[in-house]
Length: 441
Image (cartoon, rainbow, N blue to C red; front, side, top):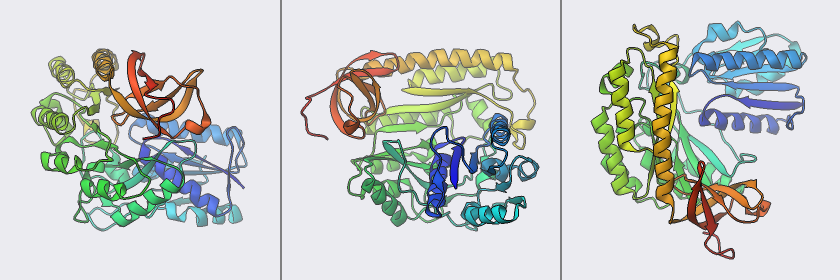
């Protein structure tokens, strides 16, 4: 039977989708090629916003309309966070929560044999330590030149706008020996760079007496891994002792995605974030001192409930002050089930759109400044794709996108070349190999 796994949402979801696909393949299912109809569709959903739920429902309806005899499986964060709603979506033949992935195969066999709809959603335990880490394993990421390794699940923070602690449960960490094992398997598949991911990556190890530095050290032990990159981080957990330990890991890429959300202290308090703007600025300064040439990227939300024009102006000025390499700007989306969803003084869509426009304009200038700051340096670039005639595209360790002027070749994809950055074009630096015959670095 042909199967297709469709992913909505974050890198953790992408990792889990790949793990489910490998699980299905081991049981004899064949992946459907692009455009090919499948007998089974697995939709791995996201629920970070109400729009995420809407996209999942739309996808289910389209798949049911176009594939009336296929088996449709809905899993992921949406059914886990809103089991009653997901259980009532008639398009899905099987509805599974995040705790039920291990039962995917027997549930599929049961449904195929009996045709009886299955809804299996087990709530996450409320207390820390009552739920083990889910033993998923990935051997390959097809058509990708970097691999994800999930090392943590769950979140204990309960930001006022976020539903994810209800969808993912409490913090759970993967054992270091399992991280090393997966990294070694990925090197056998040809990967040179891995990205550590988690729902709250910075919280890795809180439940097992370790920390994120231990995970970075563990994955760095895998022979063949040349780069270790970190996913999104909570800033206050990147204190100076942690940064000094991370600086000892030679394979760690100097790119730090520190989630900001707002540069206004009053807004941060309503968000239930665990830092203020001065603390964030000090952490950013520490990173730049300890990791010369590092890039700082972030997420910024505009239009949070109660955000006044003055609060927005403070956030805008702070973002400009830090000078991020890249910023993901998004407008607050009201999420039922969260504290912020019931807050007064909700900001109108028109105001949110205007503030988004202003924030994006400011961050685009910061982006341009960062790209020009890289010109003149020589960087190792991981070649990832063919951009067009006469060049290939890739990334430096600090995640600068580069169009490398060389003859595209499938044999170069996944290789690392020393490249001199000579200019900026659009959202890329332009570069030339230091020597076309250089040995790989």
